[in-house]
Length: 183
Image 1 (cartoon, one colour):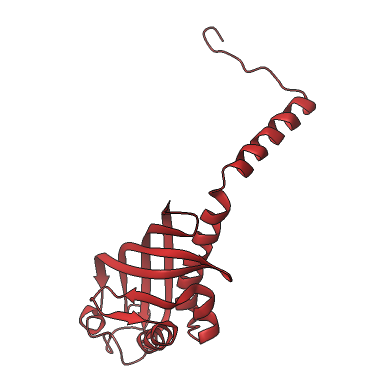
Image 2 (image 1 turned 30 degrees about the horizontal axis):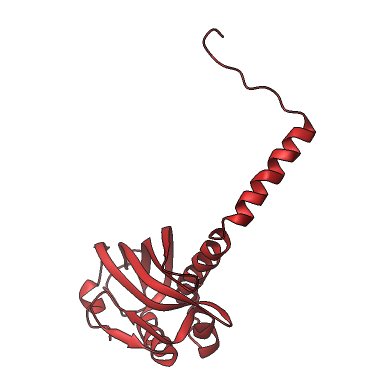
C-alpha cells in the first residue's frame, strides 16, 4: 500500500536479541515484582472476604499486626484479631459475596512502603431472614461500587497491608440500612 510503512521482518536471532533486551529492561525496572506482589495481597484480601476466611493465619498473610481497616460507615478496626472478628461477624449476614477489585494504581513511597488505589464492584446476597426476607433468595442482594485505598509495607515475611479504606460511590439493591449498622 502506498504511504504505509512496512515493518522489516526480523530473523529468529534478532527477535531473541530484542526479547533479551526487554527482559533486561524489566529486571532493571524494579517496580514490576512489587507491583504484582502488592496487587496479589489486595486480591487475597477480597478473596478472604468471599471465602469467609478470617482466621489469624489468613489475616496475617494479608495484614500487618497493627493494620487499620476503615469501613465505609467510618468504623475502624485495628489489629489482626479485630479485623478478622469484625469481618466474620459482618460477612455472616451474607449467603455469598463476590468482590471484583480492578484498576490498581500503586505509588511507591520508598523501597519498603507504597500507597494504592483501586476500584471495587461487589455483590452481596443476603443470608436467610436478612435483607428483605420476603424477596426471592436470588433477588435478595445488593451491588456496591467504590474505591479502595490504602498503604502497604514490606516486612521480613513479605508485603502486608497496613491501612485499608473502602469508599462506596454507588449502591443498588436491598438492605442498605442493615449495612450502616456494621461495627
